[in-house]
Image (cartoon, rainbow, N blue to C red; front, side, top):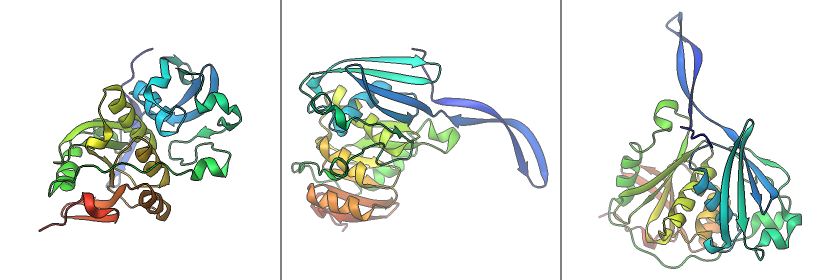
Length: 270
């Protein structure tokens, strides 16, 4: 596979101040990524073609296609003229093998939430409650938010990319993944942590997007105890966070954040 930077330059015409100027601009790449399990096509997601190995692992675990990381036996990433294919070899006892009728038949657009689930119970299945975890240090959310702005190499030249970061309880950014889709960025981050043997529950996740229901479910399925978003959550996300024992914070801004569920993990300012 040819390595991709996730960026492309395209000719543009810039209109400003009553005049036009020709030049080039950086754009983020967006390409179809097909996930196959034991040779069977399961989903096609629109994603930025970087960190695809992490994406395969995170998607498989956060979407409950495998129960444990050990169920993933092998992975091959293949670049094709019209996109990428992730061939994932899994143990034969995984849900995707036992219930092929649940396989996704629709493409997952870069901003989608359902991404092809055909059954209502598949969408609304809650994640198991996450265990108790560390309490953040005072100012941890704000420190992580400020540091994340300098850790987004794809977004810096394009302004079109979401990021998901994993931070220590003190607010130190330790891992960052980017993608044109917010849920893809989260899957890449979770996959990176699992592949490196890092317990996601030892820190917290910060995302540069809204916190919709699937972001909460993905985080909870991997044992994340605290999910913080720069934008707003949805009502369903708050309900699912409450049911999953997950602390959900939104509107993380300088000097301000809003906690929607299980506030004990975020100390009150003094």
